[in-house]
Length: 79
Image (cartoon, rainbow, N blue to C red):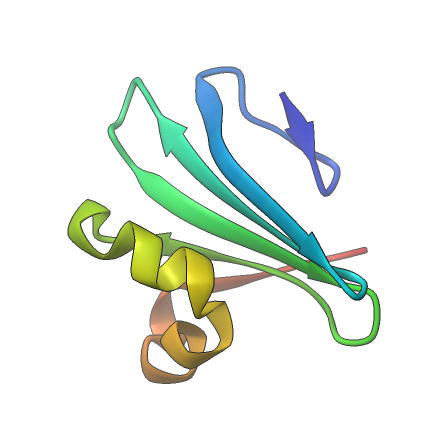
């Protein structure tokens, strides 16, 4: 699977939402069990959050709020 120019062979897309230039995708890596949320915002750029699976839906629906409190787990993605 390719997303924002990165290749994740074991990563599965679980959910995606699109609204006004914002694309938010929830990912699960079956090999590592890592859960991530990627955000691509036409006006602000792109980033990815690595999140605890218990908080995955919260991060999916509120990625900017989660990013504000866990900056050490946010990866900027060149776009």
